[in-house]
Length: 440
Image (cartoon, rainbow, N blue to C red; front, side, top):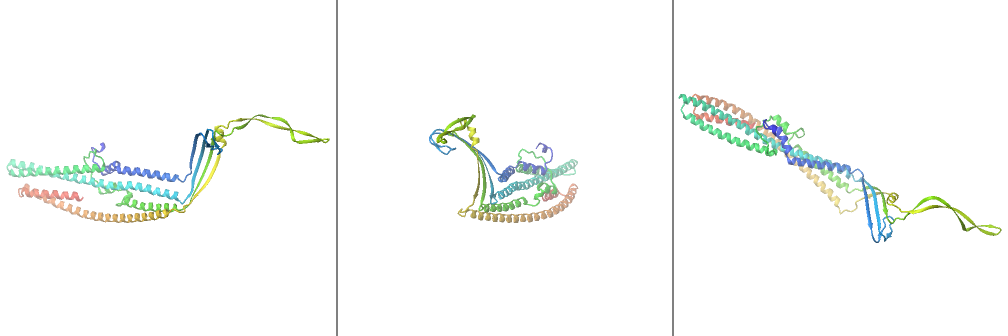
């Protein structure tokens, strides 16, 4: 802003500032960011999910041991730990169509920002040109006042020499006051035009001392980018996107009628304080001799029992600990899940029909928008051609009035014309110049 205080403000400056300060455009850009996040999330839905689960509990009274699945009456401390992964193998192309839909919604959100910028550019350009108009008219008024002041100085010198009556000076003074009033009125109009421009730009603290008149080529280059070189193009693109969005909605609703296949796998383990103690080997096995009760040897008709030699391991019972149970009780689970809608009270068919109607509405809105744009273009073309004709004629009229004023001024200075005739010629010239400015 400080850089603009001592220089003429250009249309490019105003357009850039207006877009930067506009809250509606900022909100639209934030909505575009949200749609971008939704698109990225829908793309990730094709990837498998992974989740973990852990629970620790303590129960009193009669409960079921989660490990043995038996009733117990003593206090029980238990824990479960799991790791689960799932993925969608097929879902009626809904994942692909959801990504496609979010891509179009993201483009639509971006186009909404472009539509707002397009409309803002037009409003700022018109407000800027209104400031240019008032600025040039003010300059014209100031020039007319200088002509009166110059004429007053000449008449005053002639009156002092006795070559002109005092009444001529009085009439010029009245005209000078009228010119001053006209300047004040245009200054007020210029202030109002600047305030309106600042309002559209949302820059109330901006000090506008002067604006630079843009060329026609600058107007085309500044106000409209290459992508919207026709009136209403962002608006039309948005309407076309609405049709594509409706088509995607139909595909999604049709996909809901198809079967879905899911795959789930997981690792699970658990712990229970009611688990039995474990047997632990604590040394070398020991030899043990025992008399067999049912094995005998016959010698001379006598039965003698056999001695059986065996090795008995040396063991002791140890507690089945927390971590030991978790590592020992690991299990794997795999599952395929197939879902197919059978009876839904005709809900899915109804949703498909509604989406098809919404597509027809979007197509009608596009046709309406195209018709409106064609009518706007025809109207603008007619206005442009008429403006060119009026400008050329206004310039010819200004040239003629300028010659007429020069002649009237010479005759007035020679005393051949009255002040009324001179003043009328000046007013006609001023009106002709104002008309040129407006038509330009």
